[in-house]
Image 1 (cartoon, rainbow, N blue to C red):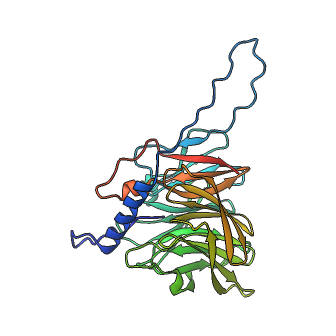
Image 2 (cartoon, one colour; image 1 turned 90 degrees about the vertical axis):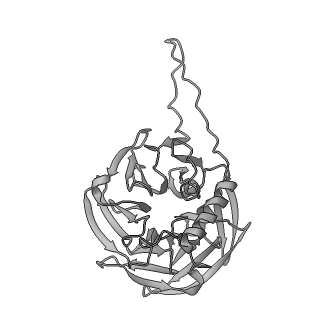
Image 3 (cartoon, helix red, strand yellow; image 1 turned 180 degrees about the vertical axis):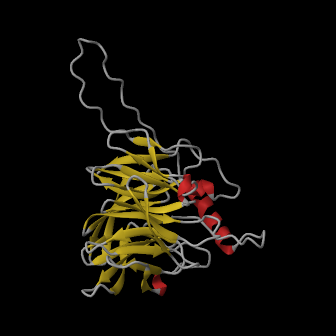
Length: 337
């Protein structure tokens, strides 16, 4: 999640957050090129033609409407993709092999904006956010068909950005504004602060700090959008937070956002400037290898089979001043691993 900033209902003057996020949005707008498009050749249709092999998977999936602005995505065990919209509050799904989406969470859900999206244990979890900052963020859970399940509020000045479950079923949530990671235990009914560390707070007023999160054996990894950092947080035997270690990444990352794990020492991260990178982590260092560099302001990533799907959020255009028109259609892109 990037570029959002709370706006005061009582004053027409832009807030420090808006100014900071506008500057970041313009920087991303200048840094990102149009994504390349690819098209599969037409299949032979002659009755004498040899059997046509199964069609290759599409390189992109088009999202509905002219204002979707996808922020995050996840996948169920059968490969169904779930993609959330920051601007409309929808979550849509692509069944395996489908190129047309279906609505799972719609306008009647009460969700006005979706940041993090995560499928776990047959449930769909979303960071429900208000881009006008008139109400607090929530973690909302749904059945995979969209039936509402639970609501877990954050504090008034917190921003729910991304989520991860560990193997014990504990849910972790990043708050972008305070350098705090929240947790709901597997048997708990509410979110509570798990870790608060000044190192994880935004570097300056109005910036977004903590963003992506993923759980591996014995640790969490976190991205910090404003500084480009990756952190590892040890999870101690009693479940409490341990040491916070900054991972020195080479080459350095710029605006890292969505984060997923291939294994306990290999991560995938998207940079808002257009890159999907694989991070090979060894101790307190990591080597970044670019897998794609022509993505359109990517914000989230999920692994399905032998490929990664990336949400191309275009949030730099949404929050530029004045707003810039998006490249339509909004898409998620497939990158082979």
